[in-house]
Each structure stands twice: as structure tokens, then as C-alpha cells.
Image 1 (cartoon, one colour):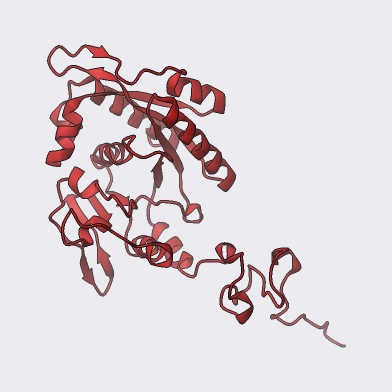
Image 2: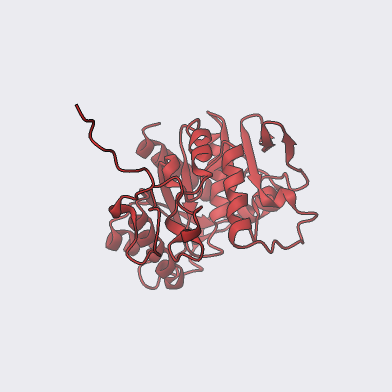
Length: 298
């Protein structure tokens, strides 16, 4: 009996070859993707499988919950929220924060570990620990001083993020392939921030990242003395509540401005522990409790 002929492994699956691919394209599913001569100068380089992904998946599989904190807008309080989230979650299981802000890493300062450095061993890079069950990784640990700028772009920047994910158990940035539980999007009440966050919501949906909810930062001002609240950044177009309604995203909560949040970040201490009576702390804890419910950990 003659055995059926098997197509040679070098023949690509037509479904994996982009329409604008060069001649002799091996296909995006091939082991040769991104490596063959035909791949040089290909406009589809971004769709080739990253060789680091298997290592990232393996390491990140050991992390029970992975939450992405993002916005699409600078200066809305992503790092501050991530730090409070980390401190709150670290009261129970071991928690890690991965600061992938390459150009403005602020997590080391907010966590009070800016003077620390990353340690390298045969097992890889070791994160810097704030306490026994809260660790962090940031490019800020690798700079000579907090005033030094990071000028990395392209492959070097991507390589650094991949190295972080391969060597650490931490909250992941954009690799949904590693099993992200969902994203929390941060905004402020102003329309200029809401527009950027609306685009980020659209981005998450297009790439298939689950959106856990929306958090509105700087929603009012809390006087540290009388505890009264007033509005500084007025939601002239409806704020996060309007954006949540229009996009069908849950509004997890609104956190008012409290000047002691900035003070805690400057001194590297947990705002939640230092000022438990603040309305901002109440808002943070309510949001965190809702996240636990959404993740099935309440």
C-alpha cells in the first residue's frame, strides 16, 4: 500500500501568508517566520511570533491573577493607582508590580525603593521587594540616578519588556497570550482625558483584552482638615460616568484628590495604611473590592 504523500514542511499554509507578503513567505505560523531571507524588510514583521513568547507564557503561567493598568493618557495617575492596588492585594497573596513606563518610571519612588538595584543571578533578574509579599520591577532600578533619561526605542525597548516578563512574576503589560485577566483603565474628569481613554477602550476590544472597568481619578478635592469635597476638574461633558455609559464599560469608582496621596508617593509609603480615614482611601478600597469580585476572589 502506498502511503499518502505529505506536503513538505517548508510549504506555508496559504491562510497564514499575509496578502502583502513578499515572495517565498514562510507564513506566520512557520518556525521560519521572521528568520528566513524573505522576511527581511517585510511590512508584516509585527505579526511574526515573538521568540520570547514561549518563555513569557511559561513564567507568567505561575501568576494567578494578571491585571493591566493603562489609560492612553499621561498624568492621570496610573502608577499611583497601580501602587495602591499592589499594596492592597499584597495583604493576602504575594503580589508583583511591573513598571513598563520606560521613559518615566515612577513606581520605585512611589513604593519607596528608588535607591535599590536589580540583582542578577543564574536564575535571571530578581525583583526588588518592598515587603515580604510585594515585589517590583522597573527600568528605574537600572538607571544611575532618577534624573537620567532612557533613550531606548524599538527592539531594545521591546527586549527589555520581554526580559522583565521572562524573569519575573509580575503584572503583565500587553501580552494577552500569557493570560491577562483584564485591564483597568484610568481617566480623569476632563474631556481631553476621556477622549484618549475612549480610544484605549476601543484598542483593548480590538486586541481582545477584557476590560474590567474604568476608574476616575482626581474626581473632586478632599480637604485634609475638614474632609469636605469640592470639584477642581469639573466633568463638563459628564466625566467618567458618561464615558462608561456610552461604551458599556463598568465604572468601578471615582477617587477624589487628596494632597496626602502625593505626599505618600513622595515618601514611598502606602496611602491606604497612612490615611485610612480619607474618602480617597474609602474609594480605593471599594474599587479594589469590586475588582476582587469581578475576578472571583472576593
